[in-house]
Length: 165
Image 1 (spheres, helix red, strand yellow):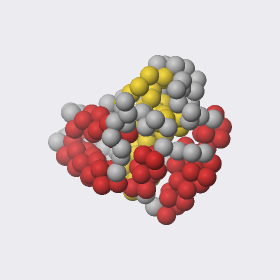
Image 2 (cartoon, rainbow, N blue to C red):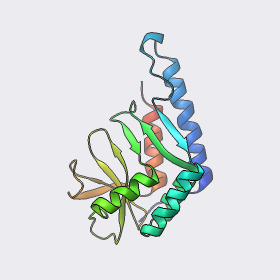
Image 3 (cartoon, rainbow, N blue to C red):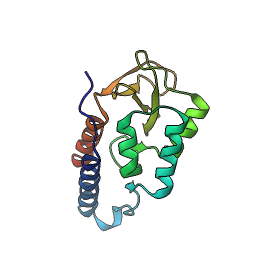
């Protein structure tokens, strides 16, 4: 059964906690090993990214949780978190959808790839609200459930950020 639906306040809270954890982790590193503060970033939505979200909605039906996410943040680049994580911009999601179509996930009428990790694994959200990850680094491989909802996906990512050395 899919998890709880995402709301804008929980995305804002996740972003604030993520920024605080990333800043705290950077502060404990010796000065000669610190990465630039902009290296890991969760970017707030802009007028341009909201227009790209509207264009994505016009292109294909998208899960409401993804729309909620993109109305608060435009993308995230977290190359120093675990195996690296990237939440793609709505423009990138649309570009990938045009090029590859939806992720082929049994039981989902539409599934959009919205994120990836540094190992080449993709994350797709289905119309059920579940987040899926392929079993190998492939767009067209078998997918398995990675999180019951986008909310749970963000919570898992937040825990990885908080637990990094």
